[in-house]
Length: 366
Image 1 (cartoon, rainbow, N blue to C red):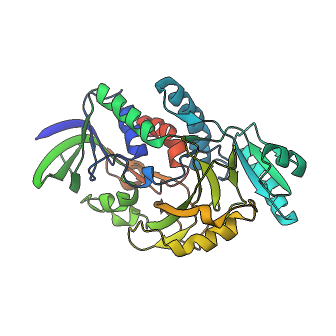
Image 2: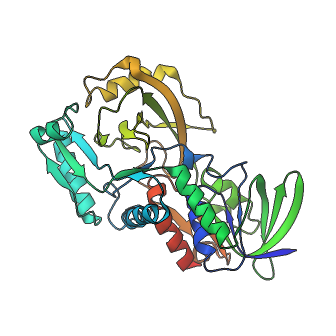
Image 3: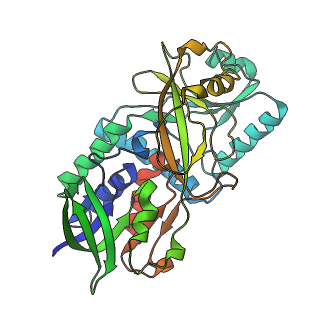
């Protein structure tokens, strides 16, 4: 039976970051991915935004990892020549009620350690973004965008340079406790094999609960319920009307239909929030009117003809549609009593921004 120091399950952005980090500590690390390529699910179906850390409750893992991860991510991009753009972001308010919420968001960001935030007046907002309509705005200079695919490629390169082994098209069937470590039964290209590892890190994203359920000795009460939340995106043809990311006041379980710019300068709007029961990435063209009505609140000169369905992504949330904030869940043997097993549950936004900070944390706790 082949033996590894550590096995990471799931080659999304967080799994890749964890694997790259562990490969610096351990001699033999295996990264397994059930799909044909890395990052095919949540990691490649998002806004590609580097978040500042404004919205999350003080001392939550999301707040801590987002603020810490943002700095690490910008530095990593510079070190590895990964395309990124520190665009800055404006959160805009229209009514007195929304202005109060904007000030609350600012105070939350400051509480989380975001030290560069400032409010802008209606006139200042017009000078910064002439096509944006709002009464006031909150500027977040440290928000930005990243080429996520290039970032994932760089992480995989680092991992393989450190002699890590990456295998795709490989499904985890069962995980059982062994006399030393854990045994994993894997299916790869219709062949079944069993390997042993001292450490197993479950970074399977939308499938993390399923992977955890395959651990024979794990008390299933430790597995939280998955709530899949689909977000749709619409592209907008032509030159971007904005120089920065433009966000409305957040909605329940989402940040609202916002405007983000990709590395090529193309603008897109989204995501919205739609809770679903099974993985399905279709984008209903009938959503266009809903998107348009949300967009014209802050972009009144928007042209509906330029708005086209683009893609969707699915976030692995721990909260249901009618529940409030739930944090990242990083579960160790202190909770589930299985030595060497680490489960990562509910790694939705800001998982991309937090990825390097999450990797550092996981490496410290195993």
